[in-house]
Image (cartoon, rainbow, N blue to C red; front, top):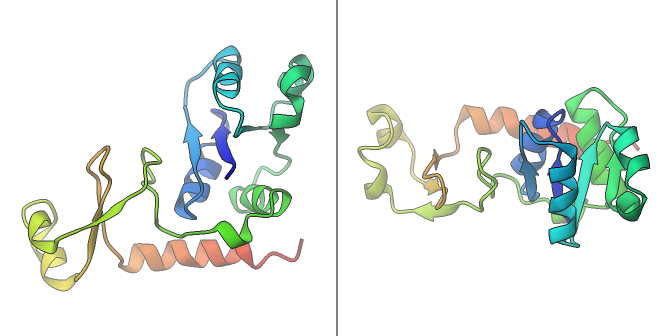
Length: 157
């Protein structure tokens, strides 16, 4: 499976791709040479950028540098999903939005003191990021994110 690296101009896109379960590294402050180093370290990675000059300056990796055209996050996500034929690889809400790690289900009793009391009482299932320990659950915020995912996936492109 393709792994993506989103450059510092594409934080919103990185979040949307993670929301859909797509491996996407994001560094909000990284030099171009360090992005290229990440490509060198793993041949399965593709760099997502709006920087055409970077692509032209690194012909060795130009096939693994994808230029994002749109300024709109939803349109950017559509570009990636459609260009890399990822519709069948979408696993919504399976990655941590903060650190990109796959989240896992956690027994409810283990989050009792980690979430608001009302949330604990009203929600049946909880998930945790094993890396950064962020707790997730399905609620109105995931419903809003699901609407965004459907807008991305139901593209006519």
